[in-house]
Image 1 (cartoon, one colour):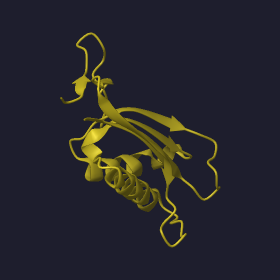
Image 2 (cartoon, rainbow, N blue to C red):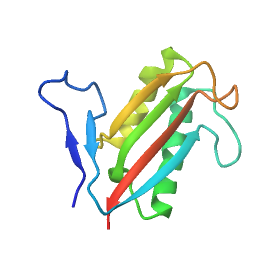
Image 3 (cartoon, rainbow, N blue to C red):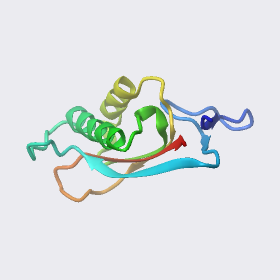
Image 4 (cartoon, rainbow, N blue to C red):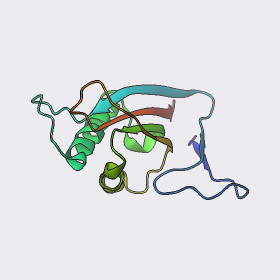
Length: 130
């Protein structure tokens, strides 16, 4: 059984990189992934949004894989950015790394994250049958 992705005809079509809803079918395994930031394995934090987004998405991929999931199993994504001007760079990396995978998603601009150097944080929920 696969998740059901929906963009109802009576609602404005979604913008880039998401579906309006994803239905998770009964009997699916769920995995909630805590927010991932631009903190690299060596504790470095790059200054630019593209590098931080790539690190966050790479960490999400590793966490999913450790539990037997993949990006294709992500049904919901919540993205937090601290600067509006970083949206284009963030979306560029998201599109490159996620391709045609478009979970339901929320994009938020916030005044700050756990550390002032963090420009982005991303959390996801994944669902997989069986």
